[in-house]
Image 1 (tube, rainbow, N blue to C red):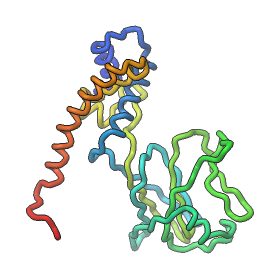
Image 2 (tube, one colour):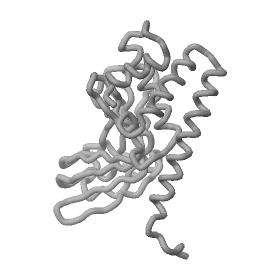
Image 3 (cartoon, rainbow, N blue to C red):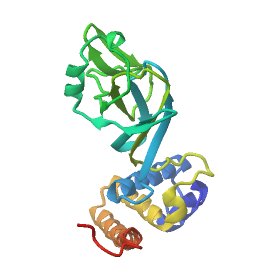
Length: 234
């Protein structure tokens, strides 16, 4: 279903003809984020692929719930970076960033992107000796990685992890949930409505209904995962 069709079904099932399209969209996206957090499906997995240049050492991106692995590739090779604690990375590479020797990236860490008090016009990436490195981004909701050493050549970085579904904004927008499971998405939107009206009974009823539907989906995912597997490796 497209967003406009979800609006129509939401009004029909809730009886709330008084809600504006903006408020209906808000509730539908709230329900969709609830579903994303509630269950992990094959559509939860995603990857960010970017071309990075010489001297690059970080990447920022949005919509990521959890980073699982990071890969780099050149024209001749592809390798996985080893995850390290941010403190370890900063101690190992503790010079001003311009003085850190470039090379083949080996390690990555997830940085703390929020500074207190927060500069809403920029993101503080890290504090190296003698300098604070910031990126000009005006929006919240970013995740990111720092790798070391900085790159000595142009590479392609792949960040694999769990990502939120595409936010629905325009009338014709669609997402995994709206196309494959529009009924469950509408249930989640109706649950969100009850949450904001503090109707505990209504929230519990919709949660139970959603969990029952998601239980059947998880059985399908298990069947798909074990299809063709004839024995357990030991």
